[in-house]
Each structure stands twice: as structure tokens, then as C-alpha cells.
Amino acid sequence: MKTISKLMGMAIIASSTLFAGGPFVAAPQPDVEPVEPAVAEIPTTTPEPEPTIKPYFGGGLGTSSADAKSSAKVCGGCDYDKINQVTTKRSDKVINWGGSDSATNGMILAGVEVNDYLAVEARITKGISDYEIKDHKPIGYSNAAVYLKPQAKFENFTVYGLLGYGVSSIDFLGKNTKAGGFQYGAGGSYDINDQLAAFADYTQLMSSSKKISDATSLGSISSVNVGLIYKP
Image (tube, rainbow, N blue to C red; front, top):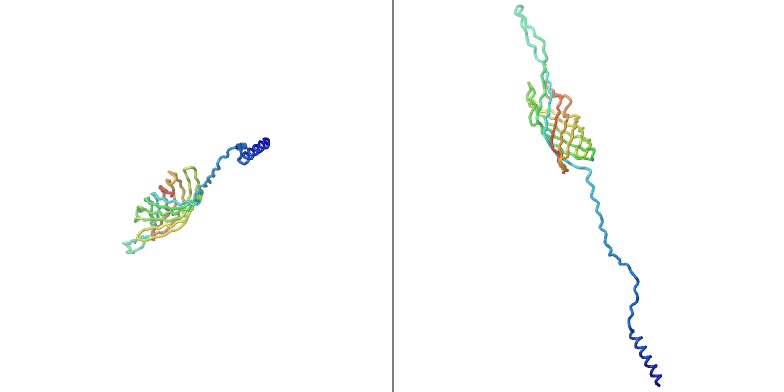
């Protein structure tokens, strides 16, 4: 009987231990390396390319020279022979006169750079003072032209040519005369900063002779200019 009681007690203790879970033993955990938190990559922005066509504006002062030539046929007059009492007419004669003079002119320009090697430029040049050529009335002058401007850049310095077409307007003796034709020039500019440049150039504004009155022709006009260019 004692034996049965002892076995029953052991069974009760075993079942209590089994259903109660018994003492907790932690299961061993595998070694795991720490994982760094993922960081989202920030996309890099590509800078916008600079525009290939760049406008610019400018202006300056210059001095221009003009060459005028005049020629007229005049009456030679008459002679009177007192002895024979006969009047004779002398032959007509041709007289020539002319010269050259310089005047101050102002100039404005606007253009666009197509690329580093070529620009297109428009200019308006107007005389601030008139040409005062000996034995002539004052001659007023203005010019409008469009040029192709081939150029070469060397760091802050640029050299360029001017090749284009222009129309000259000449005022003389109350009459206005227009003359159009090929014009050319050359010069250089220096970049003071990213937006401002100083320039100096020579332009041949009119090379062929143009008759501006019955007796007078204007032979040539050239100009030397200095000024500033602004690049927005």
C-alpha cells in the first residue's frame, strides 16, 4: 500500500512539473552580426548647360575721318580786242578742290554669340560733330550695319573681325544721300569680369566714292572706336 501511495505521489509531482512548464531554460541564440540601417542615397543633380546663344549690348565713342573731292567746270570769261574791237570767249576751265577732316561719333551695338567662334552684331554709328572740310559746307554722317563677327578667345582676351553690309546716310547742302555696300573691320576686347568687357576696333564704313552733290563726292569714311560691352 505504501508502495502504491509512493508511486502515485511521484506521478502527481511529475504531471505538475510537466503541465506547469517546469523551470525555464533559454534556448541558445545563433551569433548574428549587427546590420547597419540603410541610408537612402541622395541623387546628384547635373548642372544645367550654359546657353550656346548669348546676347550682349554695348556702346562707345570714336573718331571718324572723311575724304571729300570736288570738281566743277567754270566759265573761262571773255577778252576784248580794243584795236580790232572784237570780243573773244576764253575756253571753260575745270577747278578741283577737296580734303579730309575728322569728327567725333557715337556708336551703339547689340549682338548674339552663336558660339565661341562666331557672333552676329548690329551697329548704329552717328556723327556727334560734322566734317568741316575746307571750302565745303559741313557734312553730317550716320551709318547702320550688320556684321558677321568671327572671333578667337584667349582666356580674358578676344580678337575678332567684322564682315557685313551697311547703309550710310550723308547730309550735305540740305540734301540727304544714302550709300549701301560692303563694310569690314577688326578689333579686340578684354573681359573685365563675367559681364563687362572693354573693346577697341577699326571699321571701314564706306570705301567706294559716292556723289553727294553736283560737284562733290565723298570718297571714304573710316572709324576707330572704344567702348564697353555688357553680357547679361
